[in-house]
Image (cartoon, rainbow, N blue to C red):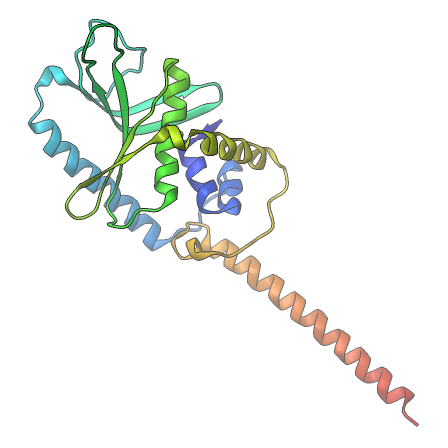
Length: 232
């Protein structure tokens, strides 16, 4: 099962993804826990503001996922969990936009939240992942997503239709990595300082460096001995 939690780890680091797939216990990270709590608080604050001005009939909290029905009236679904064909996601919020004009279908727009002012392609790919899962479950294209971010709750519209192909490719790579019985090569990157497996990977990298250094020292020592023995 490729979940949004696992896919997010894949975008951050292959090793992190593999460790999560193997249910490896976390070694903990202060920043990672702080960021998780901060983002959840940020999400709740926006939803409280948004839902406070929405009529009770326009929202469901939390939703039981089902294909859209003609009699449905809700506009916002909170904490929507969707599972289909080996994929699973928890979408923080989904907006249902009523169609205008006869014969036009209702649009569903997944929302994600990021307290940071600066967004990256990773954030957009997470919205695209939600769009892939929602699209598969509902049997319709999800062409637009939104990211609420920054101090002023700015909204970035994400054209998920342009990211779907890349998201599907990365989902396939993530699935292959998670199914592998051996971990990928350890590569340290900028995400390491924010990762819950930082302690584990740092220890492993240190051990490898020490081992490699010892091997070099032994080789040099052996060469020096050979030189002394062969000297007249």
